[in-house]
Length: 331
Image 1 (cartoon, rainbow, N blue to C red):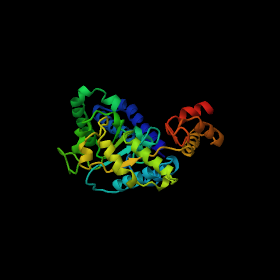
Image 2: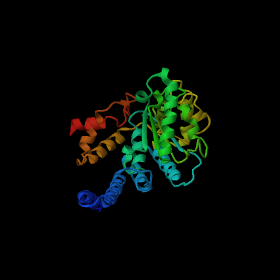
Image 3: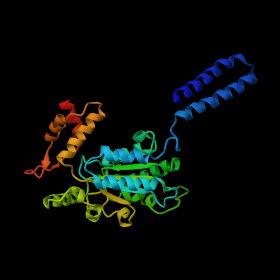
């Protein structure tokens, strides 16, 4: 239907161009005006805009994605769904949604950010309203922190002015220079507007390996006690996680006002993955590649990874991060 609509618009537009030479000057002016209007219509039809055609939250889609594509993260899955669903259903939130995702590499932090974007924006991570900052790429030099602060403020203000439903993802927060992230504190606070701009419908997601040690220690304690990992609750991790991140002088959250002023809505822990979760990741990746999932191949991939503690080999050191490259080798 969409293709047919576009075809009709293009046909009319081209026909107008042919007819221009057949009319007198006055009529030609009118025809050219119609052609310009049609041109804008076609342009706007394809151009992403900040409206419900391009931005619409799919709660069912996010729940299904978290249930079928994210493995071993019962706490994160539950928090993410409730937090995003509650925020997106609120027509008048008091502040932006601020999520801080923590855990070792390969546990699903970037992947969850992608799932959230895909279920809000029609273009997913390719949306012009989704903005990703990587600390080592965008803020590499500590000597330029003052410049980065100013640039970051202007970038966020400009993009939220353009679309209040903007999403900002800050990757590698553990590698960000301390103090830099405090520059955006006003945008995360309880303000109706700042300089005429409202930030209350935007989403800010921070991704960090910081705090991973405290998460792993808690999971190890449960395992040593013979308790199931699904028994772990947010209350078992949240306080120690936020404190370890706040007091880590190598982290971008070191002594930050974002934590001190309680502007982070949820600290979301991502647990280390076990062998069975790695197998699930491999099976899911085969399915995503339109390859018939093969349990034997998944087991070979999982066995090829490094696990800890060394003697028991319970948790994957790199989670599911290297699954794609391993599958290239085994398939």
